[in-house]
Structure formats: C-alpha cells, structure tokens
Image 1 (cartoon, rainbow, N blue to C red):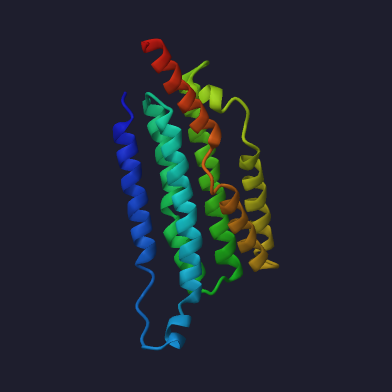
Image 2 (image 1 turned 135 degrees about the horizontal axis):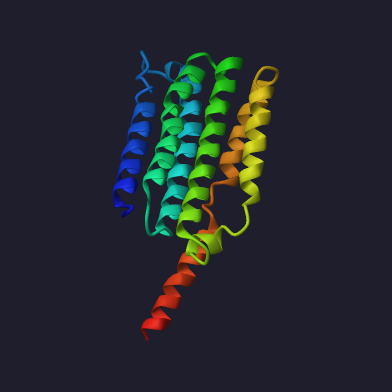
Length: 202
C-alpha cells in the first residue's frame, strides 16, 4: 500500500494536537505585564510540548520520506504512536494548571516515554518492512544512542518528579535538545539513493 494517506492522517492529527495545546493559552484579565506573568506555567508547558511535538513531526517526516510502502500492521503501529501523542495536550494542561506539581509532571514524563517507545516500535517495524539493503536499513543499521538516552532520561524524570520535579522538567527539556536535529543518517542515506538513481539513469 502507498504511504500518502498515513502521512496525511499523521500530519492532521499532529496539527490538531498543537491547536488544542495553544487554546490553553487564555487571554489574561488585565492589561499589564503582571496579568501576563500569571500565565508563565501555561506558556512554559506549551513551549516544551510544542517543541516535542514538532520534533516528532520532523523525524516522522524524515522516516517516511525514506520509506516506499506500508502495511496494515504498520498502520496500527503508527496509530499506536499517535494515540500517545494525542495525550500530550491533556498532560500539558494538567501540569500547567497545577504549577508543575509532582504527579502531573510524572504523568507528563510517562506520556513522553510512551511516545518514544511507540515511535521506536514504528521505526523498527518500518525498517523491517523495507527490508535488507533498503535506504532505511542502511540508515538505521545500528540503534541511535540518542534513543536509549531519551528513554533513560524519561524514566529518571518520572521518578525524580516526586522529589525534585524541576530536575525532571530539565531532563525532559534535555531530551528535546538532543533531538533538535533530525536523524542525519536518514538524510545521508536518502541523498545517496538519489545520487545512485541519477548515476544509473545516466
């Protein structure tokens, strides 16, 4: 099966996720900076979540740019990932509403952890589907160390949320920073594939 509908559906869901999150930024009752400052937990939560969603969209785009087909099982793997992504607005709102309280921060980390696990499952299934010698297989021959670092930081952040919750937020932010650049291995593999096709056509 072609991949266009999967990409279009994923883009639509991610757009809705971002829209729901930004709607939590209510207009303050007042005209001075003091009224605006009361929104800092909501704004910081929104920025952190927006960056995470944008990073996933970016990497999802790169992943499927290197793919050529999908199957029914892969559609479910993608839906599984989107399920956890769709919970980000809820946990973001709960965390900001309670000024980064322990349990909301821990649950926020748990959702980010499950997003990472689901995305790893999705990318692994897609790589296996493309097969040996494919662009994805060449690009993802070895697991990216950033994947294991992200999982470790999320797990640590969930535990620390009950003791030093701001350290948890710092760990969540650190994961976002290390993923700010999409998987360069896929970019290089796609470029090499294009060059090879051009050479063959000549």
